[in-house]
Image (cartoon, rainbow, N blue to C red; front, side, top):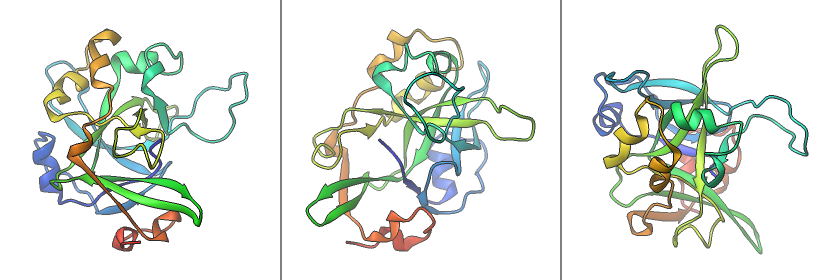
Length: 220
């Protein structure tokens, strides 16, 4: 899964990496958590440019029979996204990119859970594959969910899932607002190459979703 991530790089670099016409006003975030506002890149119409807006991280699904309880859904499995009733329409028409420069995963050890920060080796920003849903009430933000997939060789010892990371060469294809056939996008929903990422253990500050600041990245 992906339950916490970072976006700390300068806004000008974010604008350059995602082809934005305007430099967004973004504060450095070291511990982005579910239900908080997150930066999301979308294309809302054919031929339109990319727009960065703040959406709520977590989609609230309609009540349904079954065992699932709890709050908004923050992740969705990419393997079933094309057929799952809750998200198949969003997969065809409302795809987005969620900019990040790192994400956290936790492994279970003999002395407790250990947090790892995973980032690109070159320090560049990247994007999770996301889906968005319109606001349910006037005056409230739209919401988004991050897609996950099987882990690559780097993540496998840490966790059994990882977020889908979209290659920059595929941004336009993923963001296209036109109705898309699921099979035309299936090749994008794969683990990113392990050699492009690095993981390092970090201290316990990130374990508390209320903590914010560079101390979340302090070494373990």
